[in-house]
Length: 420
Image 1 (cartoon, rainbow, N blue to C red):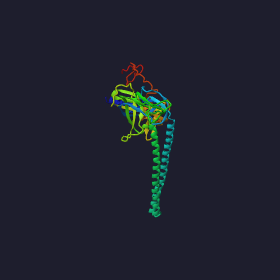
Image 2 (tube, one colour):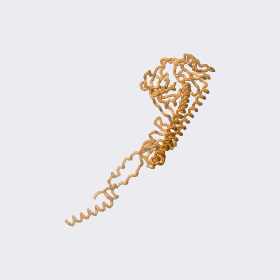
Image 3 (cartoon, rainbow, N blue to C red):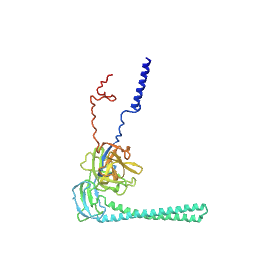
Image 4 (spheres, helix red, strand yellow):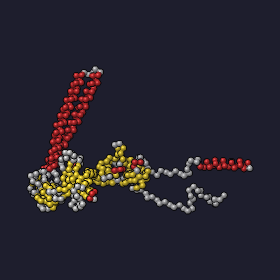
């Protein structure tokens, strides 16, 4: 009996050693570790499109009555498109005038204005350099004075020279600024004279209604002495908004804006009828008036509207979803996919609007841009496209064969019954 126990213990030890040698340790899994499938990303093929900057402001619908259309210039009338008694819509041309002399004057004043700005900036830069050198000279002399290498008289003379230069700078720049403001005022005056006149010389109707009087005659002249036309716009609605000085120069009479009136459930395009050339003294904002389509129903005075102006248009340019562009410090970059690998690409951007950004450099049409998952990528990472581009369709799961042993079970060897 004792011999049988010793023999059983020995066999158990041999079996344990054999299992340890075959299994390679109890901490390791018998299955092969799966290879890294790559970072899952969504991509979008880059293409050319039109992009514009959107500027949305709040406005209010108001009523208006009889409107007098004036021309703040003296110009020859080349064509007349309506007669007294005709119905006219906001933004339509009443007549066309010769703007050559006015535009020539505007161009000349604008050149002078730009020249005055450049002269001011150049002089300011020169004085800044001179003053910086003189300030350094005074500082150096004071340090030399401390060790006995300069006199107080030298310091006083250097300080006097510095004060004189500063005074000269202030006087010179004040004169240059006065000239610059004079040119600017002339520009604004000419711009004001072009209110309700488009770039082709068409005098536009600011309202929809009936033309009561029309003084424009082909071959004659329009001037500030008499109105071009008087239009009856009783009960006509218009949209009034206020815009900043940064937006105002980008707008022109005849341009259209997208309008949404939530209270009436209406969305439509409205033409710009007029733009004030002087700001409100209190708000520093410029008044812009838009006409409302006559067929639009449900609008009443007092309703508020969201008005979106589309400016700075760039056509046939490379655009990308704004969220795809990442920023690190002053560097902007994106990731594209090439051969199932993420590639880091630095880009420069232009206009941004409507959820997309203009890409000036770095990308070309046809590339696969990562739009989801880019924040987890590094250059050279393997990627797996799950949406967009050439993402593979997922293969359907196969049902296990009936005779396939379950996981963890060993298949019986040929000829073995599995019984002891």
